[in-house]
Length: 451
Ligand code: DOR
Ligand code: ZN
Image (cartoon, rainbow, N blue to C red; front, side, top):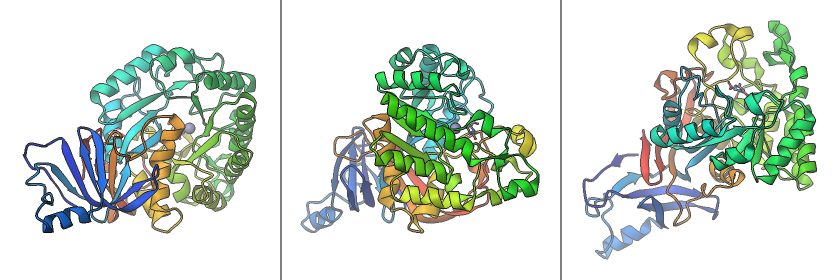
């Protein structure tokens, strides 16, 4: 896989040669050339065309020298619509020592993402039009990828009073969420969903019952008992997933279950879909890659909410991804500073970074072992998140904005946290051997990352 720039006349044109083009919108899965011009997908054609044309003396030059365009040799690579992450913590405003919109945006580009949604648990929370405007304006200036702010459901994420969601929407939020917690007052949660439904905003639900979570720092089970650490039971997730599904049915709201980690929440989502409710769900790479057996009791890079669960839960997540119950793979990218994670399992904050490891873990754990197909990967990391947000992305259709991700599924390497563009180094995957390297990320026709 090589890229070269020819300093010709036609620098706005990119020719992605002979990759495996995967477009869930049309069902196309085949080796094609993809042409980008003026920020848009211009055409997708059989790679034979230039060869045949050459023989007839009328094809474009395969190295681009004659056309002056940029050529990306994508042989052996997946060419997907730009990846979209519904679940990112950018920490900006207020906690820029952990991450900021620029470093988070660069981490996204490096991870193959062209659009990311940033969660509302900043400082101040993303609960006012001013804060939403700040995020949007800063992102437009410094982020190489598109950033869609998520608005808070309640003011200050305090669970007491709803935000002015209409005003937040006018400033550009793409969804609402209380992520980091649930709105524990069911009546208020219901009113929030009603309001979101009126505004046609999806509610992204972090399902965690505060009382049942009960100070747990890892999954409740044999491992937590062996380590003597307080556990966090599956029921704390399942009870809120069930409640929120019921509230979605009552209010007609579109509900999306964030970071499903339990067999129970997958089963609830399956049942909700079966009766036709507009409920969707996501899983994170750490929840299909690791179990609580990975927790050693000291390293807080294995601490996140929801926690790493039991093997049966991991199997249920994989089944849910395979059969379409789980619509998306999102990262829950949650950067924290080294000194914070050094506080140990009991005291350290929850969360791990994920933007720069998601593609490799998805390829290594799901695609290569045949749990999901490459097309399903494109659905779950691009097409479905776009549909859930209701945005005009996630496709390689001719005329669409040219957001494109090129991935080499065969390339093997070792994850190195020191290479991250993110300020966060809090990953449990440092040193892990993986397959699947993001080679090029293109936003609106401009390469924003190249390996
Ligand atoms: O592990 C987590 N970290 N889970 C969350 O829901 C919030 C996130 C954070 O903001 O650090
Ligand atoms: Zn969350």
